[in-house]
Image (tube, rainbow, N blue to C red):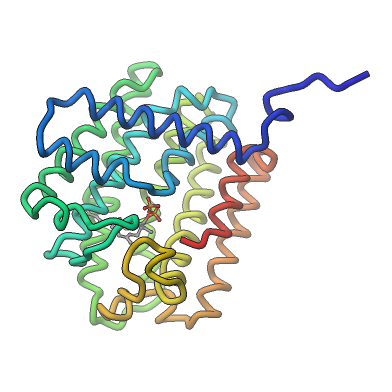
Length: 300
Ligand code: GRG
């Protein structure tokens, strides 16, 4: 007798992730089309639809799936996360911040348009994120929880303060604890929020929410350490952004503090912690585990 064919046996986890990636891109386009035509909207689309990895949206959808929810229900949250991420990249690239000319293999938003338009595109993507998240197909109380998580992860208790601390640490010799605190906020907060938002949409219980949070902490740190390593070791064409910028700007990084091999070990420790959390969540044979594995081996 042949085994019944399920969605999971028909398609591999990476095919599922690819399908979700396409669904995210389609919904991002729909969200943009709901805004009036303008040069501002063109600039938002230019950055938002550029070929990024869509890590945060996929984490939200995969977490929702792993906790027993329908991944498609996480689409508004997934798109909101990508909008916040795109806004942060646009603002991070501005002359007042990192002053970068290349992002996702293309001229940065302020180079392609102009500085004022890029600032507004970031601002408008940030507000569009909350408008989009408000559509999440969950109970009103859970919509409020989602809005609060995203706001806290993006603002002065998350990504924005991480960016501020990072700028203050430039040209300074910071210790490992300080560096970890910077990165937990600048990069980790949004990654952790992605997983937690997926959990809320799936209706996860407190224990699973805590495990998702822990997974997010490990993954966020591993992701940033890899970013530091790739900045040092990969080339501009592969990264789609200028390589070697951390050293050029005298930034505090894991590679600077621990050396290349020390940073690689630290990333590996965090990935081991992430694998443990996946096991506790009984998600080690779900697309979420496949996504974590893809991130562990990422080259850009
Ligand atoms: C302007 C408030 C404000 C914040 C900016 C997150 C951030 C703070 C700036 C981005 C710069 C940076 C290198 C942050 C580290 C996080 C990171 C690794 C970003 C790149 O994310 P990926 O690799 O990019 O997911 P893609 O292009 O694939 O989406």
